[in-house]
Image 1 (cartoon, rainbow, N blue to C red):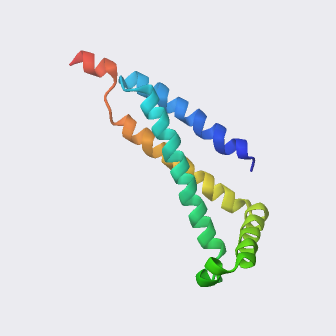
Image 2: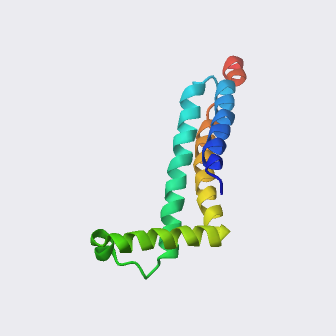
Image 3: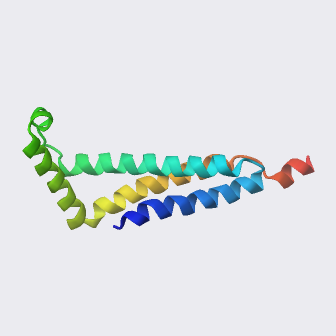
Length: 119
């Protein structure tokens, strides 16, 4: 659960999609950046889902807005849940990977350069 994994994995996946975009005749930079953005959006979605799973019926939103100590307690409990249960971390990473797969599927629908030349 290293922070570098959250940065190196989307960069690597962005490079993979950028190389795929090159074979399609599309902008490498655009598709690499789109992959990075979609991966990060997927991570945020995964964090929200994990947060909702950890605090299913026990979170008091009105108290969370006003009480600083309660806010810190909730943050500590969420951190402990993330460290103690690797399923939450895997769910977050799979949501991020889903963002990569979405961009890959969109890019896969574009025709290759060779197919365009043959027509």
